[in-house]
Every structure is written in C-alpha cells, then in structure tokens.
Length: 404
Image 1: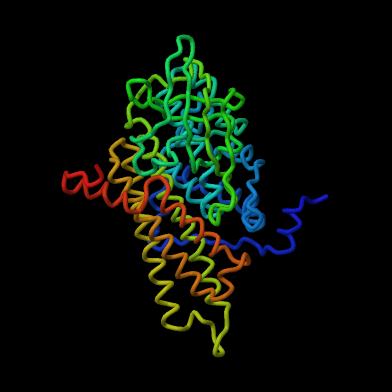
Image 2 (image 1 turned 30 degrees about the vertical axis):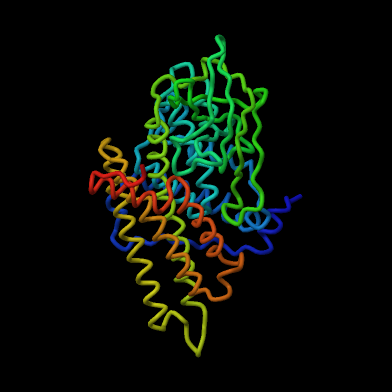
C-alpha cells in the first residue's frame, strides 16, 4: 500500500520536466566524470525528491529515510577520501551535487551540506585517525546523521562571543550551554560542537546522542526550510570523553574553515534553486494564454526571463571559477563569501520574478516557486548573513574590519 506522501504526490504532482539552462556552454568546461555525477544526482532528485517535496513542505515533514538514500548516492562528504567512506571527488563535483539537490529543495541540500561540510569536514580535517575511522564511514553511508553547533541564542553573527563552555574534570570534559538554529539536530546521532575551554579558547568536541544531559529540542512554526529538521542543542553537565576533542585545530578559525566549505556549497546550491524557478517560469510563459496569446510574447515577461538567464549564467561562471580555485587550494574566505552572497541574492530575486510570471498560481504548491522563495529567505541569512558577507568583502578591500 502506498504511503500517504506517495498518494499525495501521485494525485497532485506533475511530471518533473526540468531542463537546465546552459546559455554559455559551461558543459564544455566539465569533465565526463562531472557530467556523469550530475546526471546521476539529477535523476535521483527527479525520482526521490521532486514527487514528494511539495507534500513534505506543506506538512513540515523531514523525510528521515532520505538520509540513507543520500548516503547511497554519495551525497555525503564527496570530497572526503574514499578510505573514510567519502567520494574522493573534486570541488566542482561537490558543487554540482549541491546544485542539483537544491534544485529539488534547499532543505534537502541543507541536510547534505551540513553532513559533508560541517560534520565530516571538521572530523576529517581536525580529527585524529581514530575519530576519522569511527565516525566518517557511518556519516558517509547515512547510517548516522550529524549536525554542527556554533550559533547560539545570543551569538549569531558574533560567534566569538559564545558562552557554551567545557571544563576539564580529569578523566572527561563537562560541557554546558546551548546552540540554536541547528539543521539536522532533532534527528542527529552526533554533533560537532564548538565551545570555550576554561582559558576562553574555542575547541571542537564530538557529542553523541544518548550522552546524559544532551537534548535536541525541535524548532516548530517555520515558514522556511519546512522539509528540513531544525532545532537546538542543549548541554547540561554533559560528560564528554576526552577522546572526543578534535585535536587538529582550535580557535575561531577552525569553525570558520568549516563555514567556508559550506558557503561554497551554498553558492552552487542557490543557483540550483534559481535554475528551477527559471525553468518553471519559462515553461509557464509559453503555456499560459492571455489576450489570445502566450504571456511569453509580451515584452515585460521576456525582460524578466532574459534577466533571469543572464544572472544564472554569470553565477554559473562564477561558481566554476571558484571551484577551480578550491581544487587548487587558492580560494580565499572573501572569494567564497562573494559567491555565497551574490548567488543567494540572485536566486532570491529570480524566485520573486518567477512568482510574478506565474501570477496567482505562483503561490501554490502546484509550482515550486513560493517554496524556493521561502527557503531562500533562510539561505540568505544562514552561514553568514547578506550584510555580514558585505563586511567581509569590505574588510578585504580596505583592510579595515567594520564588525569589531
């Protein structure tokens, strides 16, 4: 018997007819492996996400079964070496994966990018061999789900002000504090948590579900990322084994390196959402008849479509170049910041223009537009707000920090 979500999808959802725009032949810049990866993940999204996502979003339902499926398709930790369960792929491949998943839904991409960039990446980069072998294969396969604890109720854009702390108790650490707006937390098996030691130095600790005093309350009432699980991390005298401290790096620079990796994925992912909005708007403009002809024949509609395609093409080229720099280890925080800020802003504007083309139908679940628009309102804020990224660039340009 079909599950409720499947029944709803069969009744309401149209076939996923998505066709990706490639006005500047960017495919010519990709390798055959890149194209194969894209084809595989695109088909996955059409089969496993598109038929059900409107129902999940309407019900604010996180489909936990997608975690295992992401693991099977290789969406978790694609740049992590194969010996730890990752894909051993380059950063262009990682970007393509995030683009295609977010074309399906930003919440689905959040699930994947948190797991790869904010959980697996720090364990691989800053962990020891025992930690890598214990956690990475299970995270890569989707057997375990992870989350990343940096943001606090009173410290978002200013993570250095965090109050979550741990004390050395001899044979273990005692962790206290709270984090909020944490993707994956309600279902997470492990959390990479950033906290201050008694000297005020920030360190990463791996906290496992089941540790006494550790809870993950879910956040309800969201109008955005409704198919993604969001919650808090609460620590009340949690005893964390000393072997769970990430030894490779400490200080605020450690979580910031993780955010660089995540922001890179977002730069690609947001354009996936933009491409989906554009594709839907283009098709609607050719099919919707008003005044006896398709609305796509009117100048203002053509203007909107032309501007959408222009911005998507510019962002695609920006992403490709940034990906090449990531592969070479040359991409700076400011360069990643520019791409994240620009591409999410562009995607949100495209979603809004696409909504105009769809008219009243654009606010319904019959089309993906309003869901993408609401999701992108979160994406433009998390992993560094739109304004904070401006200040990061301003600091890079002038050498004068404006946020301290």
